[in-house]
Image 1 (cartoon, rainbow, N blue to C red):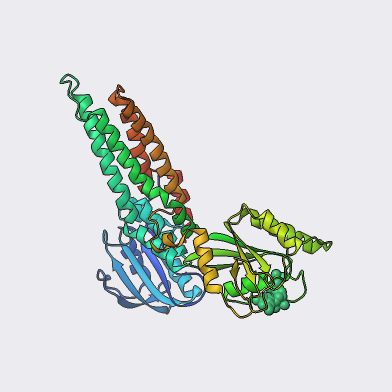
Image 2 (image 1 turned 45 degrees about the vertical axis):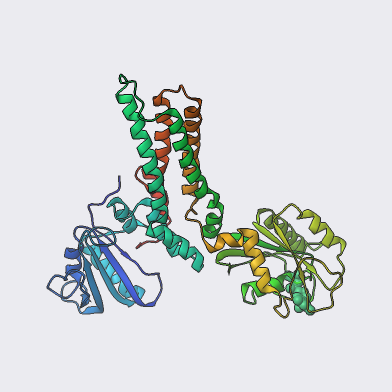
Length: 447
Ligand SMILES: Nc1nc2c(ncn2[C@@H]2O[C@H](COP(=O)(O)OP(=O)(O)O)[C@@H](O)[C@H]2O)c(=O)[nH]1
Ligand SMILES: [Mg+2]
């Protein structure tokens, strides 16, 4: 499986220059290898920050002043001996430390390998390991909160509770099997059916909010559509808080998709400004229009913008028809001008900024509902959702069989054990090497 008996090393801070940079070593020889390129002769004291210098080979002059900390196993991030070296954040200096460690016998770590070792050493389960990557990837405070909840074990706890109930039921069914002659059932079929149904209900409660969780974790795509000159790019810029898209009074200015990720109600929203939706003979513009149409098709939400200071045109009506089945908000722009036709749309003025708070709230609630954002779901990862759905399917099969009665315990047990196996896969008690590779590949090097 994975090699864990060697000592790995990596730069843990982002590439590029910074005030500080950190190099981490983990493995049985971490302390010994660090000793070969750190100047201080005496071994590092456990969990003490030690000020020392990095030297190059032999008697060459020192190249940096660093603070080194030794975390002996098992009380470290990975559960192994770890040495963390904080130096000045120059790529040249950090690479020199890295090379020093490799020359001494360390191996360059693969992405996520520190966290993988933490998982293999039982410091964290798989759900918590995945949360580490989510936490690092978080682009909004809400995403960070959901990831941190998962890291702290909220989902682990829920899965554990479900697992305990299944374990109890399985044990009693197995006991009935082991003592067939007594003719005694440790659990009556009707009780088994009810017990399974209650686990299914608990799973359903978890899964009911999964789509919200996923939307928070993965973000949403919101496309701004409308005919030329209604103010799409101006609205885009207001929502993005930056002059990203070009705004001019000339219709057909925006010819390609412009995308910006913005925080709306805590969600990372990929906001897409499109070319005005109209018939055009200009080749570039019509390609822009086609791209806009395709973007609309994959959007989680479409903002259909109309110019509130003018009566609706045929092009407006056509777009409104086209999007009537989509998840959409009709936005009436230019509320600073006289209103042409009162409508029950969200009214904004991209010029003055009026109406943008209600618009942001409308976007958030059209995506997940306001209630749901306040108390984010504990489950957000597609892998977890898929496994819990499989678990639910096995439980349903077992519940139906138990309800029908007359089914040998063995049959129930097969489905219940299959259900439990899915829970094991979520937390990583039973996970293939391929799945682990796939999960840890998305980590940064040094994490
Ligand atoms: N009065 C007024 N003019 C606006 C407003 N929003 C946009 N405009 C103007 O309308 C024109 C077209 O805006 P733009 O954002 O490029 O529209 P797009 O073609 O739909 O992207 C520009 O001259 C903007 O200054 C608004 O809320 N009020
Ligand atoms: Mg535009």
